[in-house]
Image 1 (cartoon, protein in one colour):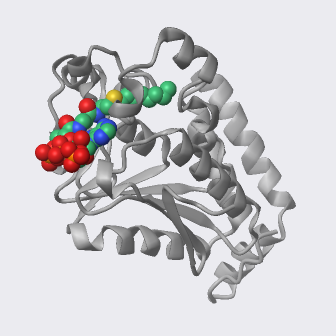
Image 2 (image 1 turned 180 degrees about the vertical axis):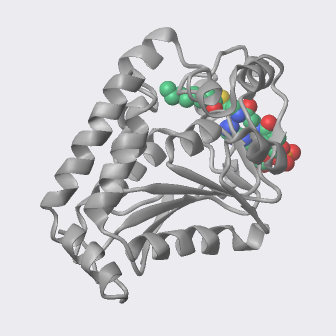
Image 3 (image 1 turned 180 degrees about the horizontal axis):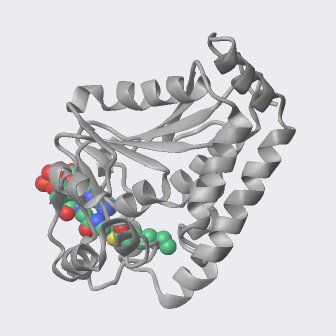
Length: 258
Ligand code: CO8
């Protein structure tokens, strides 16, 4: 598939996806989200890829859904056309870790896209917000659901109800962002995280992702049971034997991802 709204490349163990609609600050439309879904599926199926880095430009990760495309849409267009959403959850369902490398604006659907990723690395210029209220709409792809889970109710209400932007420092303080680096280092930092992960067992990374995400979907008792089952299952992996033997033999583990 030839892509028009994203640029995709492999960087060692990382699949790198760059949102590429500079004329509209990477505003999301059906084409972009469909292409993103296709690229993620390709990286998920590629045994050489351990994790995916999703980024934008220095000015914008993504400034939200494409307002020009939405302006004249009717309820029927949005509902029957399943605007943007038909491939939207693909980031969430990707079984390999996905890291958002965010510089500049991550607004509306752009903030929601970053929040679907597993780790957010922010450049110093990053600005997060859910300014949909200014356009006469509420957030539609996770802003009222993932933001309170990530940053707490107070910040979520504040951002969604006032449309103010949160800078990188505030986003890190409230737990939305894992790390802050200089803007020009944001992709390199995310790629370095993938390099670190590539030294571990891919099935174990996938188990960890599944288990952490389960924490947001279930009770503590059920989540702990799910975690325990994953822990027990790991003893069926060759990588578990290698990891523990390497420790005992005082050498670096050579994981084979099985
Ligand atoms: N959609 C379309 N075009 C956009 C968007 C956007 N979201 N954001 C910026 N652009 C365009 C501008 O129109 C402008 O185009 P042009 O040069 O042709 O006039 C170009 O990008 C540059 O933008 P600005 O000149 O405005 O740049 P500034 O630096 O002055 O301002 C801002 C940057 C603050 C980011 C400003 O552009 C802005 O406020 N953008 C809109 C932010 C916004 O409201 N986002 C929320 C959109 S709604 C949404 O995301 C709903 C998601 C629902 C998901 C649905 C799934 C189910």
